[in-house]
Image (cartoon, rainbow, N blue to C red):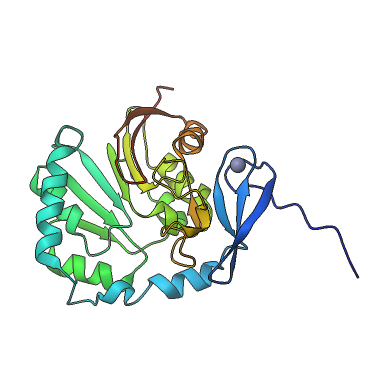
Length: 247
Ligand SMILES: [Zn+2]
């Protein structure tokens, strides 16, 4: 029996989406309103938990790959954020083994990190005992009575099944003036191939959703954040700072 294809609403803005094609056996769709791209259907929360809870990218409770070079790069990066971080309460969302959290601590932050990978958090707690780590998902973290001055999320958003769980948590843990840094691939960037599906960042089930600057700004605006700064990138990546509005 033939039936009309069901409408699939954009998980970011609720607009109509259309199929953009298939990659690695996953249907990829694009929103006609905001330009958000996403895998449909998203893998289940259980499938994502299984994917990230144990030995993601070869890390274990006692081993983290390329630790020395990662620490060096994290320290250089933390200096870039110094004025948002020094003397502030900071949260790294999707912190993995806690390397960036430790870098923030070294430049003077009260540094916290969260991740759903139990092994990564075990590693982080063992290796960086002066920072605070949470092995929790967005919902559990959002219910904690915590407020952060600065939040950091780098190369995490593209792994999530929809943007709103993460944004609800960010909203719950922020106050007016809280600054958040976001980096993720930029599907609106001129460096993305004309045949978008050939772009290497479209690699489900590792990556599940793709933003551009306008829809990321619209997403944060919906939770009370203004775009503070957009760092120019030669490669197809978003690198944005948002700030929570007053009242
Ligand atoms: Zn949309």
